[in-house]
Length: 421
Image (cartoon, rainbow, N blue to C red; front, top):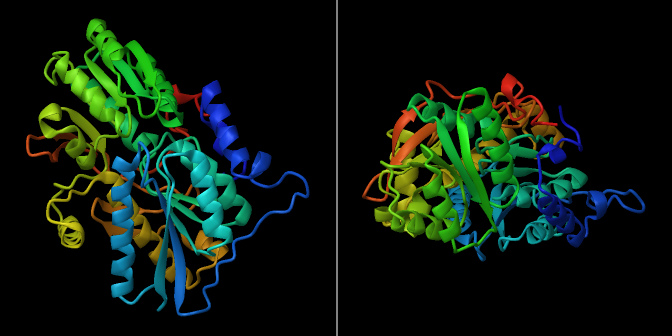
C-alpha cells in the first residue's frame, strides 16, 4: 500500500494545489523535497548511542491556528516528561526540541527539515492542518524519518514515514453522518475553511448524501483566519437545512458561531455538527454561544475511565487546574506512548525496525484502546458524538460499539468509489 504517490490523492482545489506546491518549493524541497537535480536524498542523522535521545515537536505557537495547536504542544510536553519520569525509552532520557509551525505549511516543512537534518531527532510529533502535513511529508519520506501526526484528517493517504494517530474519515466523518441520518436529518449545509481537509471532507459528505437520500442545500468555504461570516450565515439561514456540517477551524470558529447565534439560529432550529470544535475551542468561543451544539471526536475530557482520569489530573497538575483537555491533545499525547511501545517492541530506535514492529501495538489510552494497523499506519478509534454543555465541557451522547478499524481510502464503502482517485 505504501508509496510516494499516495499522498496526492486528495481532491484539491486549484488554489490548494498551488499553495501546496509553493509550500514544497519554498521549503527547498523541489518537486519532491530535494529530488531535483542530483536525485540524492537527504538522510536523517539521529544518534541514539548516548544516554539521551532527541525527539521533535512541531505545532503552531503563533498565527491563526495557535489557539488550537499551542495546547497540543503542552500535551506532548507532558507525555515526554512522564516517559522520562518512568525511566525513559530503552533506558534513555528524551530531550524534546520544539518548533513553531507559525500556522504556515511552508514553515512546517522548513522546521521539519531542521529537526530531521540538523537537530538529528529520532522522531517528530506534530502537524495540524492537512496542508502542513502534506508540506512535511516529502521531508520525512526523503530522509526516511518518522512523523507521528495526531490530528483527525480527510484520509486518502498513507506513508511508511507517518503514523496517523488521529481519526481518518471512517472514524469521524462517516459516523457523524450516520448519527445525523439516525436523527432524521434529510438535508445539510456544508461550511468549512478553505484548505485540503474541509474540501475533501465535503466531497465525502456529498457522496454519502447522494447514496443516502440527503439533500445538500449549500456549500461555502472561507480562508483560514476569516472573521466575517455574515454572508455565509445569512445563506445558511435562508437555505432551511436540517443541520450544518461544519469544518471551519482555528480562530475563525469564534466569528462563525457568534454570527450564527446572533442571527437567531439555535441547536434546536438548525444544529451544527462540528469536526474541529473541542474543549479548547469551546473555551475560546464561549460556552454560552455553543450550548447544545454537536461535536464529533474520539475523545472528550468527560470520558469516564481510569486512564482518562489520570490524564486529566496529570495535565491539570502540570499546566493549571483551569485547563481543559481535548481530542487533538489526547491524540498527540497517545502518539508518544505508541512510539515508545513500538521502540520497546523493536528494541531499536531505527526507523526500519519501528516500521516492522508497529503492527498490532496497542495502548490503553485516555480515549480507550488504540491499536496500530501496520499496513496503513493508522490506528483503531472509537467514534463519539458529544453535546456542548453550559459548563464548557462536551458530554458523549453516542459512541460506536467498539473501536473502528481505519479505512483511509474508504475501500469498504461502495458509495465512495471514485473519491480516492
